[in-house]
Image (tube, rainbow, N blue to C red; front, side):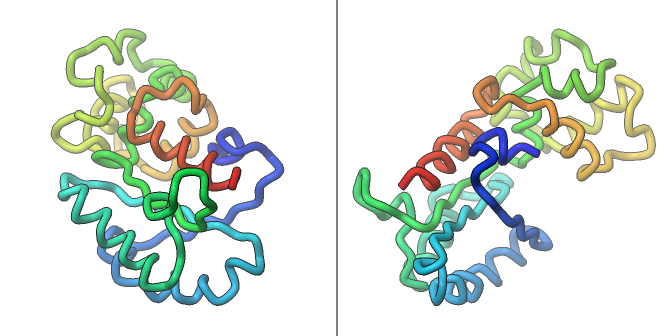
Length: 188
């Protein structure tokens, strides 16, 4: 739902979900080596998105970039400005749910009981700096508004909120880096 809003309907995409960051990091080198065999001929591109989860961003970025380099694939970070690249590596800081707090209008559109002043409250002013786990905070906000009382169904909440998100309105810096990176990825 969100990717067509970010890229337009003319781009096709597939999403491959892993069982957490460890699974992604373990499988990414082999997956990228496999992609390297055909990606240039298929005019395909790869975006790798992982939760930062309070990990050292530079170390995590090096792991992702090294996996692409070892597969012989050029990343946005390794390409010269304006040169084509095939792989984009980005983080959701701290977790993907921070991106939902970056667009509180979308959260309220999906869950009308959420307070209209949410983004003005100190803990939510900077979506990428929310402490205590962003999915836990989202669960608490939604439960206080009368939703997901039995526990946050992450995929359901993500689908519901993403349907209303406006990429240009999102206040999360990590979301904006992902968005601009995707636009650059499909533009080169």
